Image 1 (cartoon, rainbow, N blue to C red):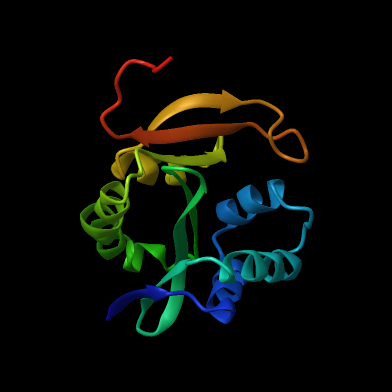
Image 2 (cartoon, one colour):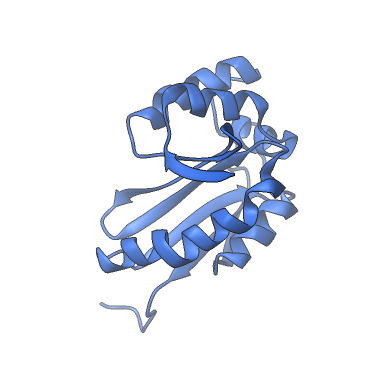
Length: 162
């Protein structure tokens, strides 16, 4: 049984503690901490104040995600998952494409964006499934000079306004 709901801090911390190895490498490259327990605590505090969502499989938190508008009409994507992600990926992908993105678009969001480490191929594949395309490479972006890639989905992209 798969469910998707608002995430509580303990669920964010649980997924963060058990996140996939590549997710941990990526998140820790952008955080002031290096250990899983510290990162889990940091992420639970940071995202519990916002509307992060949790995907559960048989009641077990498997993935945490969210869309956060730090700039007007631009949604930044947060996502992390445990090794059980394959159990929820299809339902979660359908939810994002059929419900979450359309809800934000109806509210005026015209850009969805995400950054991911250059070598996190699994994340890049999934972002492309969600309709995002690679648009930039950021060298020396992480705390240890890791390279990141920016992906974006732009709604009704037209010529730049001036």
